[in-house]
Length: 324
Image (tube, rainbow, N blue to C red; front, top):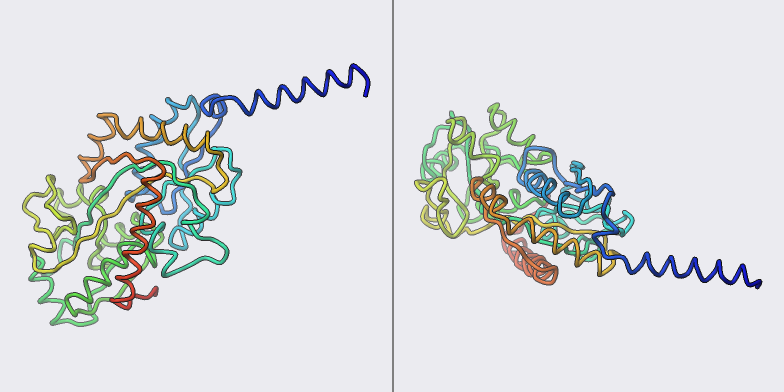
């Protein structure tokens, strides 16, 4: 090797080493980061991503965009991110049902979110609301149960897809109350809500953010909350436990990246997400939607996902819940 070649080789090696040593912020600055959402616009997952996008772009000095890839109970979006380059440019804003329940009811060949997605940061936690169309002949949960029992098979419910938390929660409700309702799966909460407002379906159980405006306008009626306490935004709506059913279920929404994401990028992205979640503005927007902003480390988020998966696995077996 000539002296010139040796110097060129050493310079190239030094440049590569310097590039690898760059902080994650510098590696992401000026780039486009895509937040993939596994459901259609209009649901809480989509809202969470859009609440995160703008402030995250300022922190990372990058362009952050939201890309809705609905279908297959989150598997389409999850696989897209799992197979993306592990450089921090493609992340998924994940819904807890898709992370912890879908693999149990509707596994995708060669893909498991618990194995193929790397935790980055938690965004919000939200209980679920049970709502019915405005002209449904029941104004309370007990009246609803009486109607369903008197009309077996005539009531249908919408969910954001097979294996979604709405699906499993409603199936559990059916088991606990010994009632029969027909499941109508959609490609996200947005389309499900559109049909509920149109009167095509009778009810849904989902997170408060997309429901509150329609409840306040009288287009939907709220019957009960699946959280441990009542919602501040709807103080007159009882919890399921208060209504006589031992049902507690909440949804959470978090950010994940490809499993091969380097540790320095995971750390930087996690810190940036936490910085957004802990701002008064993010917390205010979450609370206005009946949710709560909750920051977590990657390790805490990983433990949450694993624990929930174990919990739902037990419930699915006990209630004999199956994907439609």
